[in-house]
Length: 547
Image (spheres, rainbow, N blue to C red):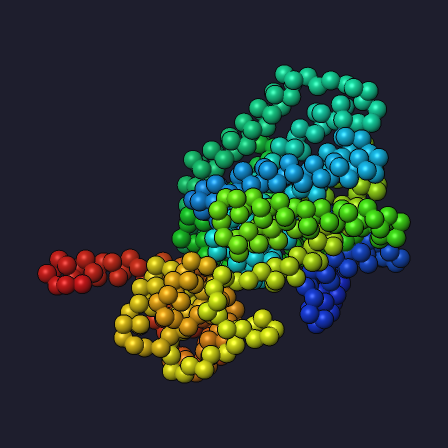
């Protein structure tokens, strides 16, 4: 037999993840549960075939890179600054509090302060991969609370990057055999300054140079007319920038890919880039969860059940309560507090990097690794369930069944309006003035309340979700108006509605000629391009006609 560890690990991991993920889905569990079990099956602590852990970890890193690149495509710097008032101080306070809880448990076990610090930091940082999967599945990624949650975790990632640089320098004073070794304050400040300087240099380079070169390069490739080259260019940008950021500036692969995606988001081709990279992101994200399952030694559950439960409690209960209190003190609403709290009720990729570094520095014993992994697997499995318990909006105007699902509307011949922002609310007001029946699908709190105030029948959820469209009785509707600005989600909504009602007249908004073509390919009857309508309005004014 050929010695092909890369191919074998890749094939076995994907096939087993598919089989067990399908079974989990059939049992109404998250597919993530199946992926984690797949890793456990091919890991070193289970009989039979054992996959190459080093290769699996590198494949998983590719998934993190591509996923963070996709986040950057949907998360602009302006949006990050919009949530800085909650995300930055909240993340820092939460990390300090969660680390303190981890140090307290470590002291109870009998570990040193250094071991407790590594252990606590591992429990303090949540997985961006897990969060994004949950937000995408529930269509919350483009909501304000979704952006706040992502911004919070990005701040956590930045703090962890700094921690990974500083820990080797302070390790001699933290170990059990340090005997009171003192830190060189000047050396420590120098390390911190160099690290922060590298991150700032990378950010400036991407903002000043990358935001011009990357969109230009992608535009040039798009004009060549080769879809294959376009896909290759997207991968080259995501992976190339991530690798360059790590080796030249010393920042993480994930952070480099995220910034590359943010820069590319300013291009007119960002929608197409997101669509083309999605299959790669999904496939490698699966391998990330498989690699997590491979690391876990399940015997720790029987040998140290109390410590396992306490560790899980810190992650799921302790961090969540702290985050909720912080968000509410910042005068944010209840649903935002719950979203942030549940977002942090898990741990992931940075936790695994931290425990690996801790073992390398001889600061973390095997038990510490297994406790962190047990908490990671438990929290990753429970996190999608917790997310589904969050109310989609704070309003009492939504009728739901006993199962919590929206009841199908009795309206017929009506208009279904997806999105109630600036565009959607204007359309809704016009329909209301005409006395025409319409149903609004909206998942953000403030627009949802505005829709109810305007007399609309409201369905809380995302318009791209077929279940929400069915609840709006799309099969009996006469028109669908998709007023959301995200053309990827708009395309999903149009496809789902067209499949349910092929005779439906569908109207959508677009921001570029390419988006118009994309939306029509999805099934839109008409698409309105903002710039064209502005031009027509100005021409009317030039001719002396009223708008």
